[in-house]
Every structure is written in C-alpha cells, then in structure tokens.
Amino acid sequence: MYGDKCRVMRKMLLMIITAISLSAFTGESKYADSYICDNGRAHFFASTPFENISPVSNTAVCVINTKTKKVIAKVRMASFVFANGLMQEHFNENYIESEKYPYATLDAEIVGSLDYTKDGTYDVTLKGTLDLHGVKKEREIKGKLVIKNGQPVSATADFEVKLVDHSIKIPTAVIAKIAEVVKVDVAFNFKKYEK
Image (cartoon, rainbow, N blue to C red; front, side, top):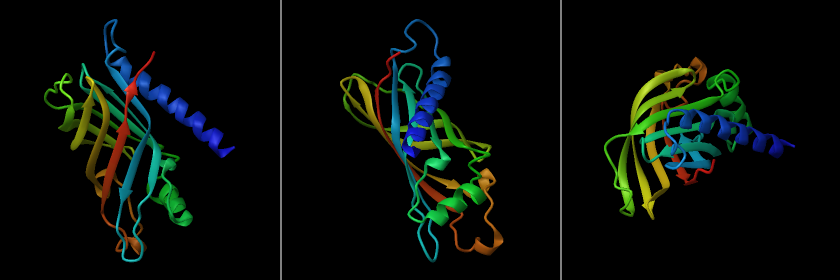
C-alpha cells in the first residue's frame, strides 16, 4: 500500500517537474535536448555528539536540457529514510516541517559551455536558486557531469547547507547536539526524455 502511494507520488512529481522544466524551452525541438532522472539519490549528513544523522532518498528527480543548460532538481522531504524512526519523525514534524514545505528544489543553469561531442567527466558549476523550507537562496554548486555518446549520462554534486539560511530552527534543548551546517550529496543517472 505504502509502495503504491510512493509510486503515484513519484509519477506525479515527475510529471510536474517535467512540465515546469520543459515550459521554459521553446521551439519544435524543445524535448529533443532534455534528459531526466526520476530515481536520483539525495543524501545529507549532520554530526551530533551522540549519533550521526545520515538519511537517504532514492526518489529525487532531475531534468537537464543540453541546449538551454537549464537544470531543475526536486526531492520530496518526507522521502528521506533515517536509521532512527523517531529521528525521522522529528525531522519531518519539528525541523523541516515537510507537510508545510514538502519539497526542496534547485532551479539552476550550467555556467559556461560544454562540448557534448566529447565523452568524459567534466567539472561543472550550477548557478541558481535553492528553495528549501520555503526560503529561496541563490547558490553556486560544484558538481561533475559524465558525457557519453554525446549525451549526459550521470551527474553528482556535493555542497553544504546552513540551517539558518533557510530558517530551519533547532529547539534550544538540542541545538548543541545538531550540526548547524548539513553536508549534502546527490547523484543522478539520466535517460533521454521521451514525450
């Protein structure tokens, strides 16, 4: 039952992010240069004196357009799975408020140009807006993009998020226990978008 709900949510999220992403592209070939991942990995790490927090979501969505250099990534906050169930509950209810702010979204563009005719692993910089916990913050994020046969096949990125930048409040009783900066890493494997 839960698995069915997750699949429906992922499908709806995929349709929404695809529509948002592709609405920015114009011309008859607007779909031709788009690549998508609907089962990307998003992970974050925060240290505490008692237990490290290291949840993972395997349902992150990302769309990349090689012509416009547009990149949109989105993850449902409630999809992060924690080793500790109580910690997962506190994360969703008290810190990230996932019912009120269900998604984290990156709306960005690749800085500079890439030659997709040359296979290889390229360092890339994304410049855009990270929307987390209802607060939008301009960001530059470094990552790697793998190109094979003229197409992007995978991408990874590591970056840090300051909780205060997104108005994520930690209760005074536990503020000394939770890191104020969270380390985030993401990984996506792309396939050609089919209309």
